[in-house]
Amino acid sequence: MIIPGADTQAFAAALANATDERLGRVEYEQFADGEHVVRLPESVAGERAVVVASTVDSDAHVQVLQLQDAAREAGASEVVTVLPYMGYARQDEAFRPGEPVSSRAIARAISTGTDRVITVNPHEPSVCDFFDVPTAHVDAAGLLADPLPDALEGPLFLSPDEGAIDLAVTARDAYGEGETDYFEKDRDYDSGDIEITPSDADVAGRDVVLVDDIIATGSTMSESVEVLMNRDANRVFVTCVHPMLASNALTKLSAAGVEAVYGTDTLERAVSEVSAAPVVAAEL
Ligand code: R5P
Image (cartoon, rainbow, N blue to C red; front, side, top):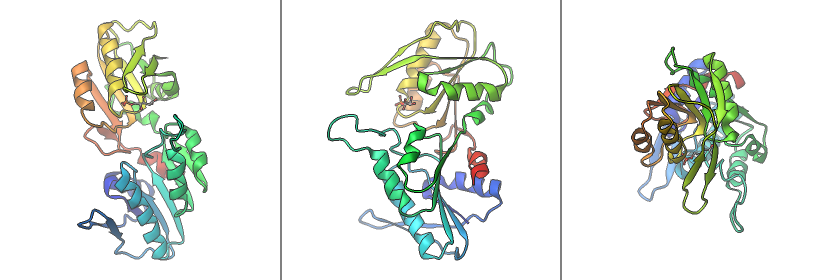
């Protein structure tokens, strides 16, 4: 049975579809003091329970633990946890003295309630090593080509930093044509300000597809769009696996002159044009 977290219901339905497994109906309740409780009204005894929840905020983290525990309590024979988006994955080291390795702390907690974990494009694949149970990561970057128009003009698939170049290459391969390149990015740790150093790729008159794992505040992508527009790019499309789009990210992108923004449904947003469920289904 596929068991959805409250914030991941569309993804869970798509996964149930892709795997032909039963979609469980979950009741979510929040008490007056802010605490949550979940209920599984249908029996999962003797079945494999697949908890599907993007840990998009702290409440979602608690809910994953509750769903795992409810499935065990109800007699599930195996509990698999799918984290389409794994929150805190970017704090994968103690960047300053006194800080935690948050992704390790979260991974350990999630490991206590499951036999296996699957996640989609974690910021660094090495976070999978923090789990105490077998953990796989799958790549949804190829799907990012799906919503793009058919006839791009001299397409260039570009990542805003070197770390995401593999995603740009995968999206380009899926699209079927185009060049790839990457920018250099520096982020001021205190202010969060981004500085983009462009490559010397000639972008004038060309359609550029920016590809990254996540758009959070939108600073990385909007700075990149601005650089490209100043260099007379034709149209700039922004794509990512995890469209977090916190705060005014979409406004920043629009103001920078983006043609369109696309993401997958690991985070359910208006721009979630394509489902990453099939790649998870293949791993399941
Ligand atoms: C960092 O290396 C990531 O790949 C993203 O580029 C970054 O997290 C995006 O963050 P923001 O949208 O806040 O600039």
